[in-house]
Image 1 (tube, rainbow, N blue to C red):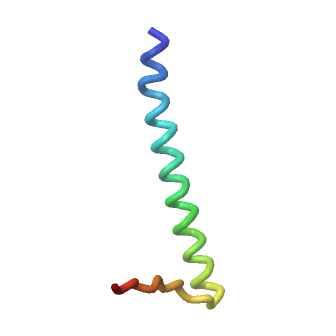
Image 2: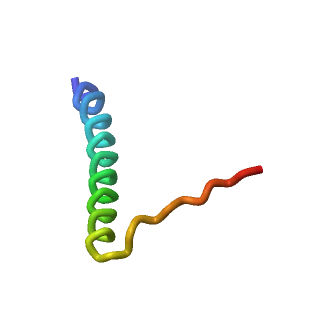
Image 3: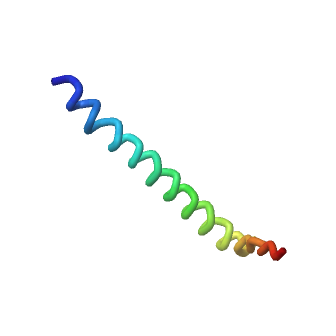
Length: 47
Protein backbone atom coordinates (compact mmCIF):
# COMPACT_ATOMS: atom_id res chain seq x y z
CA UNK A 1 0.00 0.00 0.00
CA UNK A 2 2.94 2.35 0.41
CA UNK A 3 3.27 2.54 -3.36
CA UNK A 4 -0.03 4.42 -3.61
CA UNK A 5 1.50 7.26 -1.65
CA UNK A 6 4.47 7.29 -4.04
CA UNK A 7 2.20 6.96 -7.08
CA UNK A 8 0.19 9.99 -6.01
CA UNK A 9 2.90 11.94 -4.22
CA UNK A 10 5.63 12.07 -6.84
CA UNK A 11 3.49 13.51 -9.66
CA UNK A 12 1.96 16.02 -7.25
CA UNK A 13 5.39 17.10 -6.06
CA UNK A 14 6.60 17.43 -9.65
CA UNK A 15 3.53 19.45 -10.62
CA UNK A 16 4.03 21.70 -7.61
CA UNK A 17 7.66 22.27 -8.59
CA UNK A 18 6.70 23.20 -12.16
CA UNK A 19 3.96 25.56 -11.03
CA UNK A 20 6.30 27.12 -8.48
CA UNK A 21 8.90 27.76 -11.20
CA UNK A 22 6.26 29.28 -13.49
CA UNK A 23 5.04 31.54 -10.66
CA UNK A 24 8.61 32.64 -9.94
CA UNK A 25 9.18 33.53 -13.60
CA UNK A 26 5.93 35.49 -13.72
CA UNK A 27 6.79 37.45 -10.58
CA UNK A 28 10.32 38.10 -11.86
CA UNK A 29 8.96 39.45 -15.17
CA UNK A 30 6.49 41.71 -13.36
CA UNK A 31 9.21 43.03 -11.06
CA UNK A 32 11.41 43.83 -14.07
CA UNK A 33 8.57 45.67 -15.79
CA UNK A 34 7.90 47.72 -12.66
CA UNK A 35 11.59 48.56 -12.36
CA UNK A 36 11.56 49.92 -15.90
CA UNK A 37 13.83 47.29 -17.38
CA UNK A 38 11.17 46.33 -19.88
CA UNK A 39 10.71 42.93 -21.32
CA UNK A 40 13.57 40.98 -22.76
CA UNK A 41 12.93 40.28 -26.43
CA UNK A 42 14.23 37.07 -27.89
CA UNK A 43 15.96 37.30 -31.23
CA UNK A 44 14.72 35.08 -34.00
CA UNK A 45 17.29 33.08 -35.84
CA UNK A 46 16.85 32.92 -39.60
CA UNK A 47 18.83 30.63 -41.83
